[in-house]
Image 1 (cartoon, helix red, strand yellow):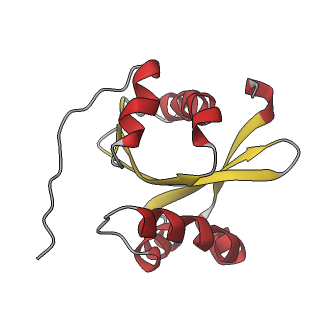
Image 2 (cartoon, rainbow, N blue to C red; image 1 turned 90 degrees about the horizontal axis):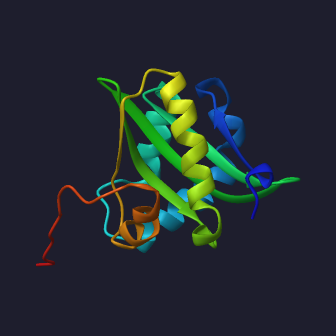
Length: 138
């Protein structure tokens, strides 16, 4: 996929209700696929309040490839949730575009919280693990 084919669009908090029916399917996929403390209801509440930004990652002309939810605190963007299909084909391009937008908005560092597969996909563009989370089902 080429850089020109991939676009990122932030969904403003005023528009969350309009877009949520199509976004919730993607976020549910992410919450169901991996052990996460987040629910789709919590993602919605954060997005609706404006605490988090919801992103739609698309391929021209209008095919949704994935979604992401981020928040920014102390000039650090924290990518809380990413869900998508065939993400290995577009994640580098999408993250490069996200980094440009983040820098333009005063972000100095990006932290991604996700499954172990993201480590493999993002190491080629400079991301490295900084901590690990462990779990045990009781």
